[in-house]
Image (cartoon, rainbow over all chains, first blue to last red; front, side, top):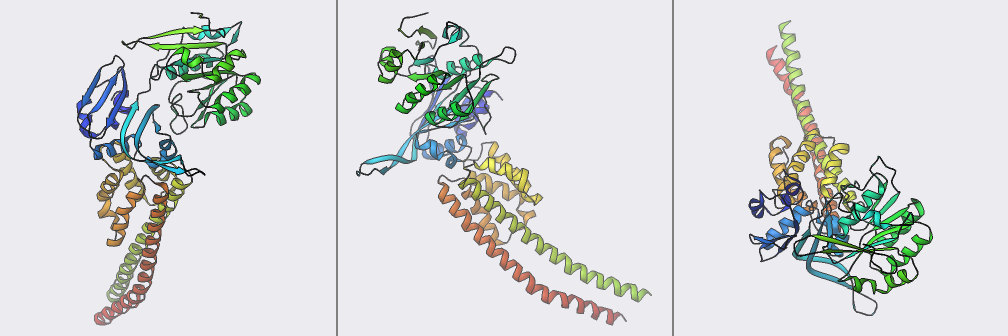
Length: 306
Length: 174
């Protein structure tokens, strides 16, 4: 049985599974299921295959397989609209949300998502070596620059971040750097029962399923990291913590998503970091219609290095 | 001499029957206790540790299971779940128990509780699941108590009955 069938193919509803018995999963990026619609298999080259039809019972069956018959164990994650399964594949959900009320009687925090009607499985890819050419460009005057990898959703930020971590952490032959990964959504290390499923090098410690800002504080205090890596920085708290990390002498390696490079660098938090000279490298990752990726690296003055 | 041997044989036979009945009853009580223990551990694992049910089953097989048959049932369940061919966890649970029903020999009420227990390990709401587990544990405790009372009561009758029966046969032989 191939890795695809073992990790995702074997979790599809039985009636769909028969269609994909020969599937190797190459280039597959997303599997989308909507109640009342055909199941979609979306590939990196833009191809979309539609198979079978998903009813409410098939959706329940699919969720049971994805969650290992334990949907309750993902209660917290489901409240945020997704959960991550073995192999680092992210399962996004839509359905009926129940919200609590805030003090002013307005709808507040999401308490639950039930009657799930849409599922999007984003297939995680581990492309070892994809960042081999990028990593040497992240150094400035012999010091690793604080780096953010920027891209549109689905362009491969996490894949590149993971490979950067693996290379910088060393492979056991060369002495790597001490890296702490704050893996809020279990997508970088794809930990299962606490054990990382993806190769993150020999000197990497993973704090799994922990909110980024809290996690960064924890590892900074306790793990003496040379680099702290995290995915999808976005909240005010996240960026405030970056200052503490930089002031304490550790380096940062993170990702931010946005529509364009300009759109991202105009975000106030990133603009501040750039103006204060806290960021030395910005990597803009792009994917064309054929699914090929290109990289542009910028310095703190937003001048293109390569 | 032959008569003496015959008498001893009859007494031994009567006592054997009595102890066989008693050990069967004890075994059933132990099985109920195993189920109660399983529910207690399950409720803790789900409420406090939020462990997926399969992880809990594996740990129970490895560390807690005392009854070998129950461990086999859990192993069968684990195989069912691993295959991802049962659309719900409840169906996988039921299939595993159906395989071992003849060997486990549950009473009617116990069987109903066992089948319903499956739902509590594969739900969506932890609070509801734990609430159900505690309710089933209470039902099993009542069943256990009833079984113990019944055993004590029957023991009072069977013991003298088997001895006097044996003695009567001996007298007839003499």
